[in-house]
Length: 73
Ligand SMILES: [Zn+2]
Image (cartoon, rainbow, N blue to C red; front, side):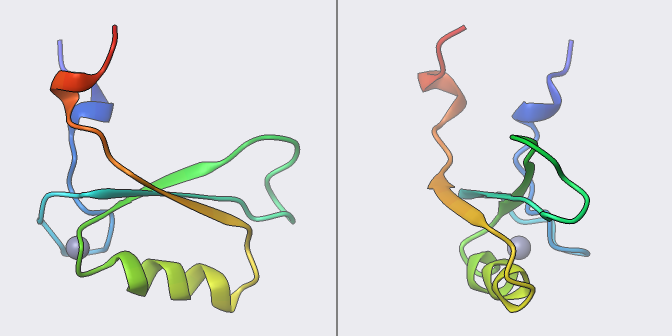
């Protein structure tokens, strides 16, 4: 079975690079409570995606992706 979380491709449109960072963000106008969206970003696109969200004043959190082998199941 394929776990979608194991597909670690950058979320930037057209980018097929391996993501190294997760950006969790929220649009206060459409996401209520603790619902967050998660984007995955390669090193090149972390600042691009971060600035995209910062320009809209969306709250966001950036954390490094841990390798799948280190994940506890
Ligand atoms: Zn990318």
